[in-house]
Length: 228
Image 1 (cartoon, rainbow, N blue to C red):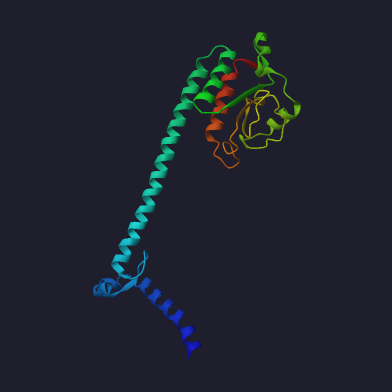
Image 2 (cartoon, rainbow, N blue to C red):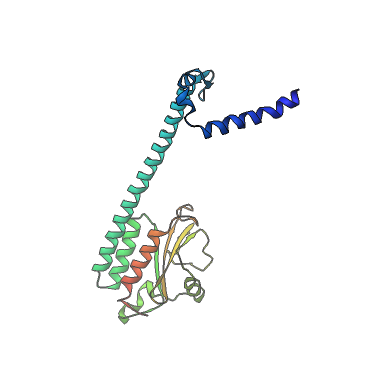
């Protein structure tokens, strides 16, 4: 008999569940039953009515939705702040007439507005003004780096870019995380490299939308200063 009851119980539960799903008006016709049904309390010992259980479940859902909404609002505010910084950088890049000023403005914006401690710009295109050839941005770039950048379809973010960056951020710098953007027109002509001592600042799965936009802005701003 115990074995038979063991098999019949799940079947009975299934039949009740199927019936209630097929007849959602059941409790409308038996409203008094709602007050007679008691369930274990989800917040401790004892039992509560079905109506109270539904109210608690609804409150829990509202609490979860409020938390998600607050998180979305926080992300929205953060994106607005980043968007404003990118816009300010864009205006600065458009206003510069000299490549040395452009590089200085770019480095200052990324360090002060975006809190990126290490910034390096490397270009292997020829400067339109020969007097700019001595700028650090036009220092010779290893062929390995150039080949690697050619295949960079989206910004790289991570701890080990796997290419020689010695001296790009200063002789004493030992950054732990990197974000690298290829600068390009019809072809790649340089790299914008950002780095941080915080190994979690740039990581492989992070969003790269604003990094991509900054790379595109810098590429466009540089085109009037170089020969590609």
